[in-house]
Image 1 (cartoon, rainbow, N blue to C red):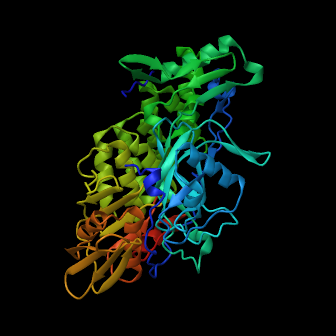
Image 2: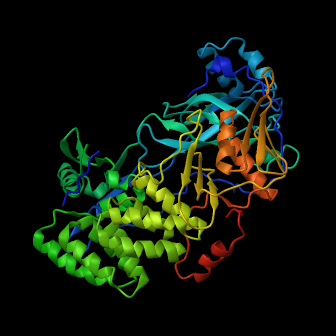
Image 3: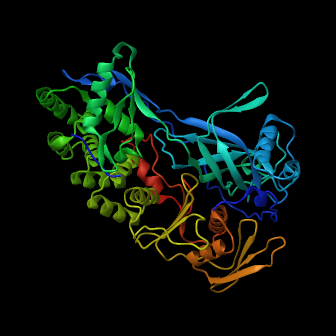
Length: 566
C-alpha cells in the first residue's frame, strides 16, 4: 500500500564597529544544563527474514544515518570590553581572509577591538536534513583566548562546512550551512565564577542548512545486483510515495547495483530513525499468499510483549486494512507494552484508535512519553490535536511542553497555539496560551528561541530590580508599575512604564531592543529573586532512555518545586 501525501540580518561593516555597555549581572540559579550535540540515533537492528519473506533489512543497510559535524571560525561583536585581539594562528588567518573577501576595511583593527572576539563555531547536520532546515550551533572561544565573556554578543554571518587542519592551514569542504544570530550564554555564568561557561554559548536555530543530506540504502556486498536494487526500490516505493507538482513519485530510486536513494516521507520527517526501521521492515517481492501467512505470524508476535515492538514495526511496514486490524487488536491488550507499540504503529498509519492509548502513555508513563508525542505529532487526525491540546493543562511541565511541541509539529497554524506578534518582529517565537492548569512559563535552550506562557495570569512581584541584557534595567518599586530603561552609548535613554503583567514586560523589553537571551536572563533572575510566582522551566522535554517499569519517574516531576529546571 502506497501512503501518499502533499506536500533580519546585520551587515558586517555596521556590526563590526558596534560597542555595547558592560553586561549587568544578577544572582541567578542554574537553569541551563550542559548541552551535547543532538542526541545520537539509536542503533538499527539487523532485520531478519520472517517466514518465507525477505525483508529489506536482510539485504541492505542504511546510508546517511550519522551526524555530520560542520564548523568554522567566526567573529562575534557587541562584547563591551570582554573581547580580545587574537594571537596569530591558523584560525586568525582564516578569519582575516574571510573579512578581506567580504570587503571589511581595516580588518586587523576590527579584530584588535575589545568589543569583538574570534570564536569557533560548530554544528551538527542530522540525518535527513533538508535545504532550508534550521538547527542550533555552538559557539566558544579557542583554548588560549583572553576573551572573558560572550554575553551580549552577536555572531556575524559565517559559512559552515566540514573542516580539517592540514599543513598548518584550515582546509574546508563544501559549504553546507550559514549561521548568525544572538549568543545565548548560561545565565548563571560569570567571568569570575564560571569562566569556561561565560565564553561559550549557543545560537538557537541560528544555522540554515544550504544542502540537503542524502539518505539511502546500500546493498550488502553479497547481494549487490541491478535486479535486486530495482526490486528493493520497487518494494519501498510501493509502500511509500509522495506527490511533487501533482505527480506521484515513489520515495526510492535505484542508482546503481549497490545504492538506492531514499527521499524522506513527510509523515516521518521528524522521526528519521523510525522511518529507516520501517523501510528496512518492508518485504521484497512478497506474494499475497506469503503476506497473509506472515500476517498470522505477526499477530502472534504482536501479542507477546517480548516481540511486540518488532512485530508492530513490520505491521506498520505492511500497512493496509489487514495489518491495521491486527494493530487495533493490539491496543486492546491487557499488556501496556503491547498496547503502546500497537498504538504507536497505528499513529504513523494515521488511525484514530491510536489516540487514546498514546495519550494515556504520555500522561502516565514517562518511559513512553517521548515516543508517544512523536507519534501523535505525526498524525493528521483531529482527535490527536484535541488530545494534545487538553494535555496543555496537565500538572506535569514535561507533559505540557511535550504536547505543545507535538501540536506545533502537527498544526503550526492552529490559532490556539499560534505565535504572538512582537514588535519589532523576528526576535523569537512567543506564545501566550489560554489554558487551565498551574501558571507556567517555559523557555528553551535548544532547537529554537521560544517563550511560552501557559495561562495568561502571570505577574511580577514588586519591589524588584532586574537586568535584561547589557542595555536594559527593570525597576519595580512598591505598587503595580514597572519602569524599563535602556542605556546605550551614544544613544538617548529610552523608557517604558508598564504594569507588573509579565506579557507587558516582555513586550517592552523587545521594543527597547532586547533579544531572546535578554528575556531569558530577566525571567531567570526574577525567579531566583522570588519576583516571579509562576513556575519557570527551561527545556522541559521528555527524555529518551527511560525504563518503563520505573514508577517513581512520574513522582519527582510532579512534586518538583516550581521554577526548578530538570
